[in-house]
Length: 227
Length: 270
Image 1 (cartoon, chains in turn brown, blue):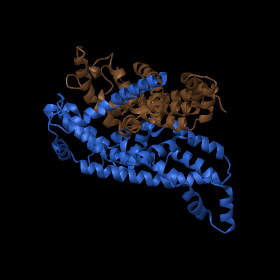
Image 2 (tube, helix red, strand yellow):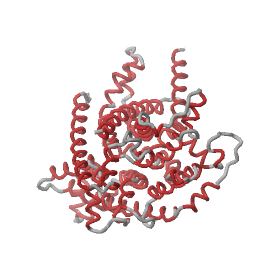
Image 3 (tube, chains in turn blue, brown):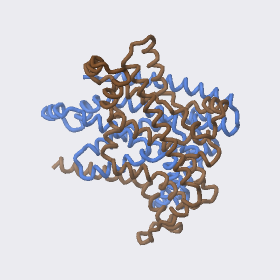
Image 4 (cartoon, rainbow over the protein chains, first blue to last red):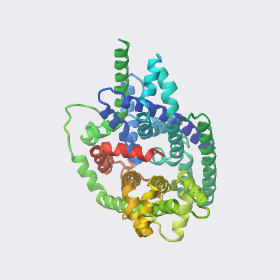
């Protein structure tokens, strides 16, 4: 049960955050600010790295005492936290890693969509005196909806599919606090050799994913405006 | 005036976000190129060194892991390109019974990827005795629902008149595929290949389960075996090994950045 709860929190926490950040990044990279090529590289780099390399990098980043995370806390005079070794922070730490890796990929899809937004629509709205915030909310965001459906479905699949970082960083611990469904299936089946239970959990997972995908598609599609 | 202020605000936001995003990676690079004693204290004057890379390369059979990964992605890529092309072509060219149902059936596999079926796939492979082989790692990925979907959508955009003209000239079905459909779709093939190579270079869970011996391990699994911190490996070595195994992808990305991003975009537009 703990595992199902973790997976739910993980999906609810990472998907909207990654999508929100991705839209923000795409807007920044798409703007006419200086240094956008460097920004794009910085945002997209984590996507290129294997999840296992990402996990090693973050393992080091989170390492108590020598990791950058605890050094930054030290600068502000805060005690260092063993992020991965505490039941109340381990799952959040995993979620942050996932957002870091995924947001850059989603940014690319939004970037493509943003470049396809017709400029005459935006110009017309500006002539009518709309602020840039309004232009974004009323024109750009509705046009991004098909992209959001695509990205959200992908993010959902990835939230269940990618557990490499859990294996490397915490092995689901401490006390199952960072264990996700697929990781749990892996542990039950290949460490405890309980194939029957593993197979049962797989069925549960396939069923859940199917339901979620249908629900998500319906929810986002219902509100879609197509031109 | 307000415009200028907005601009400064957004630039600051952009720089801060980009810096935060680059920080973990930059820290890892820093540690990999310095001696262990500098890994916890950041000093600009610290001497740069390649020592960590040399030690890490010798500490584990990384050349073997590299070879395994390259064999693996070659098998997967060739099988994917051939099989997905043939399936997509069949769906585009022929009207057959159950075509719609079969296509929907393939699309379901976009959702239920091979990772989710690790238990069943492992049981199947151990029954046929293919565990702990490179073929075993490749087998669940030899065809791809995403590839079939992408190529089908692309083949649908090929003008029917070209196909018909080729038929009138007496070209066989195979010839039409090879001389009409494939050449017109090559940007999609390129995009798909890039996505596929980076996916399989990075794949970890399935190879971890199916392999036992170092002779067949791909890079990701080799790295995880090497970099288990409990075994007392120094952080600088872990970081060096991590960078080393991902370097080909990173270098390729920096060189082909423009094409890569454009191709990722094209692959994403469904």
